[in-house]
Length: 201
Length: 201
Image 1 (cartoon, chains in turn blue, red):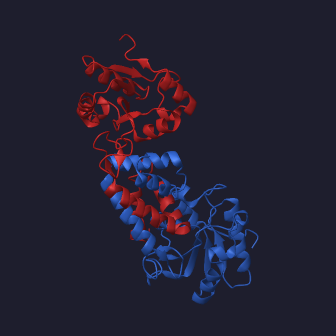
Image 2 (image 1 turned 90 degrees about the vertical axis):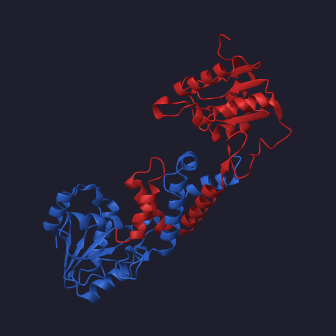
């Protein structure tokens, strides 16, 4: 490329997942040729987000405040805690269900092969929260993938001596599915018909 | 999303070609969770590129100078002008061939269905350049797509009364192919064996 700024941009675009050298070049040329204003806005949004978004001190979800919107809402039901893998799962549940409890966002799932263990997901913080707030029911809404299952088993295992109910969303979730993949009405039903977990408990 | 900065970022990422709401969310979460430094660098590279990259006054290629590196190189052969569709084509030719002439970058190709006509590609500027510099041979290196062919025919048509040779890269270019898709040695050969255009001329 005759422009070194263009080379740098192409190189930097590759931090985006699934973007290889060819798509990066296509993206850079598209912005330069057809949407410079959009490129400038994207630059600003990136800077704002990378600098000002942190993790909610209670649930780990992304927020620009100390506590996220859900955790700072005093009207919600403190006896219910729903454990999800990703920020997106919170949105899906909020939109589709009548769930009124709080959340804990693992920001991932146990995956020994990728080197992701309990500490990386903030498990200690989760158990502390459960015990300090006096949660009556922990709803495991991890995905039904192998890792999602393992994560659910790990959590229920650690809570086996606590005096609380552990349930999991089962209905309508086929094996391997992410929360996002389920329709709104299915998810609502899955919440209503949640089952004790593990099944033998 | 509980974070409005995150919502804004997801929204802004969609200026990138082929990025829909889901990939935009995946990109934003990936940067926040795993590569904030990369996100900040991308933001800076975008701002720099969008603000400081302009078009070379002679060949239209992207550059942060008045003239691009090729056009400001006085050692090159003024009698040869190669017409390409995209900045990427210049790189491909520079890397693969011994071509020592100048370029003109159309920044697209004729496509009436998309509303792209001669004016959008800077055709007047191209013909002015050809006539003012005293070019002996115009090498059409547009793609072999329908639009690339139409573009090549349009240019050769406008030059039919000028005292110069018009050639086109043919060898090794199967129908519909972009310059990028050809191997280096093929492209080198295509330059060596370039043919008068149109064939009947």
